[in-house]
Length: 145
Image (cartoon, rainbow, N blue to C red; front, side):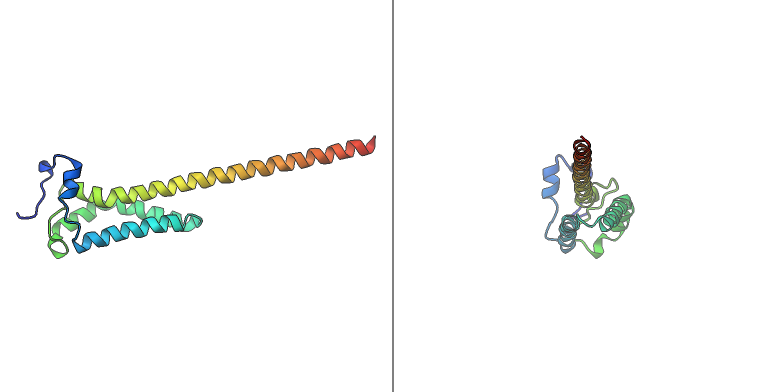
């Protein structure tokens, strides 16, 4: 079969990536999708509810990637010049799942950073409040003398 890359023939990751025909229109669309998702992750970092929905959607895409791979393997002639979709799912893992999971990691990292900032601000506010209460108590003690 012409244009088929056998998983058993892959010797290293770089040669596998080089064997992909990146000018295929659907691969350009997939890369554009990943760029759009990454941009959305960064631009919506202050919108928690939207990011939760995006995060769950991305995880569902990864979860259903095996089914997506099976459908794409049966219908690859409709949208691709080569048959990339092997039974082990290497291609879909590399070009679909890994970028999505990296975006999920970016979101989790952003959430952790934001939560540390919130905890730091909360602790500062608590310390300011305690200092204010101590100053008020000292003022009452000096007035009663």
